[in-house]
Amino acid sequence: MKIAIPTNDGINLSAHFGRCRQFLIFEARNGEVKLIETRMNAGCHGHGSSDGAVEALKAGGITVVLVDAAGNAEQIVTAFQSGALRPASVGMCQCQH
Image (cartoon, rainbow, N blue to C red; front, side):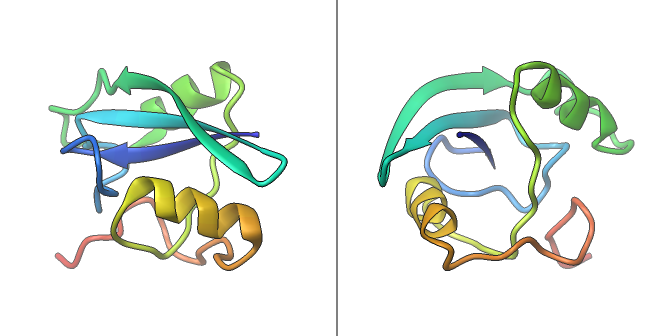
């Protein structure tokens, strides 16, 4: 399974899915997590919706699932893969504004 994590610093989850600088693309398979790609977010300077980012990821074979989490990207992927994180019930933006 390919999992994309929005990030601004290349390490931690970004609270703004559609406005992040890049996506860390992980391959999660057989209990192992491996960073396979860093993909720039072409819409990171926009102030609109995150629809473009979602569609670009889907076109790359990545299923978009939102979780309510913060912190280290690799740890979040590992937690999701193990079932410790469930899909969030809120929208794309996880920040408090």
